[in-house]
Image 1 (cartoon, rainbow, N blue to C red):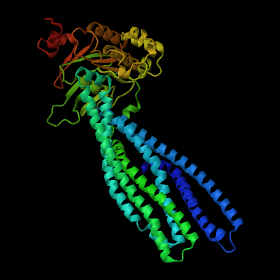
Image 2: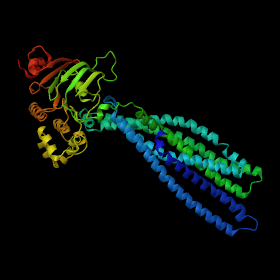
Image 3: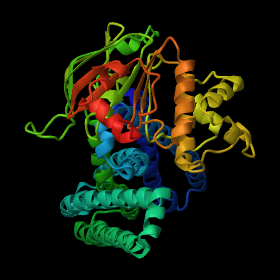
Image 4: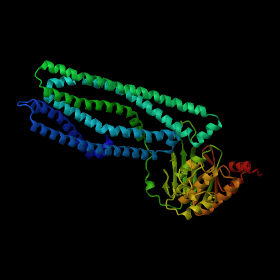
Length: 569
């Protein structure tokens, strides 16, 4: 109901139009009564002038009904589309503000199913429900009022079975709601299977391990489940309509019996009453049909509102002033525990304190699982620390700060678009010379220039038209175009060969002279261009100092890891 609040004026006009439509439709049977009782079979025989007048009134009413119906259709469609548009954009905005842990746990197919499939089902429900429910209710009341005006006794007979129909509709509605929820979950599962199994990685894995038949069987099983649910939903929905059909067929004959018993009903009154019965049953049938449709869509409503009820990350005040600064980073007893881990589990980071001066270059090393990536995410603002603080130039970091913080990850994401579009995502105003210069620094320009359309060539799904190392170098060029005060490289060169990696890293450091750069890597034996080395182990900083100082401690973690990589004594 809140979604309709901004359009209450339009909804009010719609109610007026529907009331006018129902009143005009109810006027036609009253004209029919006049035709029978006065114009055709009244005293003096047929009254042709009166018949002509009534025919003219009927034509005018028909034109008015058509115009009003057209107006209400346009207005209801417009309101419905705006409501669903608001729902869809609100949902997308809410999801954009969710913490990264949400996307790590939620399946991509589930998100797509709710954002696209469920909102589409809601669109159909709203588009049909709003005008249908209003016109059905108003039409029912107007027709019932006109029937009572003609004959209260016959009106009572005509409506005597209506409560039974409504009772069956209520009972069946609960079953439809449960079936709808199951159906929406199954559709989401199908969407997830399609998104995962028909991706490039999923198809490759299925072929490598010979699992194509099993994947097809899994999809077929879910599709069969959805088909069974569809059959059950159709039977339950039809049960309501079948009970309504019995009511619609039986009631006119009950009215004829009542008219025969009453004995004082004129032919014109009976004909008009019969026509009004049809006008009464049409909105009642409409209400029953809309009830089944709405119940069937209830699962979609619940799933969409479930996302809208999620608590997003708060918008910090610091994001309102992203002016670049010198880039001095500091961590004060910072720690982080991923959601879902118990209190007894070891946190990913604990008690990390660091001072990284502006324009410094820092190398972060450590064994797998030591917390390097988590530290990089905290420094880049992707995760707010669960304890302690991270500060840049005196401003606390609890969310990404575009223009001040940037991160390039091990698994770079490239959109389905051109190479130039992917590069300009970080700097929409970048010129072609800017793109070329950044790509020369990351040693990827020649590869892009050799493509048929150069920088306008498509990158493919998630950059599938490039190798892993090429994707990383494109992502590094994109990070350079962001021109942030602090750049965090989180295993961003892991797919490069050692010689290319050394060339690219040295070129990036030279380009970013005077700005802060933090590099997280497993391969650091030949990298000696960094001011400071930070060694992590089990979520804690165990060493922090210059490269030469740490190499002087033969039993230290950094020295041991360098020996393991280089074989040097």
